[in-house]
Amino acid sequence: MALTLQHLFRKNITTQYPEKRLQPSRRIRGQQFVWRVDLCTGCATCAKSCPHGIIQITTSKNGENRYIVDKIEFDTGRCMFCGLCVEACPFNALYMGRSYEQARYSHRLLWADKEILMAPQDEVSAYGHPELEERLPKQTLLVYGQFSQEMVATEND
Image (cartoon, rainbow, N blue to C red; front, side, top):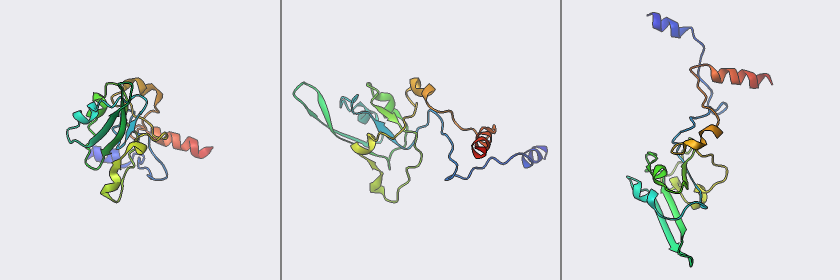
């Protein structure tokens, strides 16, 4: 009973989601992939490591004994976002994204093609790339009151 009473009188930690957004973890496995075409060699190691086989890559050779990625697609509707493809990429060309707002009304809209994967506004996650962790913003933790202090400071400005 004492534990119940202790939590009864503490400050509320609920946020109003669309108006106030929290910072996710730096190593979030968000529902998004970010692909760097300049680093990708078309080796298809990411597609081979995927347990569900959701990655489709089509490559062609150019004259200099290199591969060009003609098509790369992810079926994010079937993906379990395990991150094995990101960890398997030997050239650091594939990242998990930090976005968690990827809901769609139709299954065919859940395919991520070349243009979606190369979107410049997408923020990469530090999952599988710990060297990026220092450059990303810290996670908002509601339990310790961090978010409420930040909101009071921004509302007073």
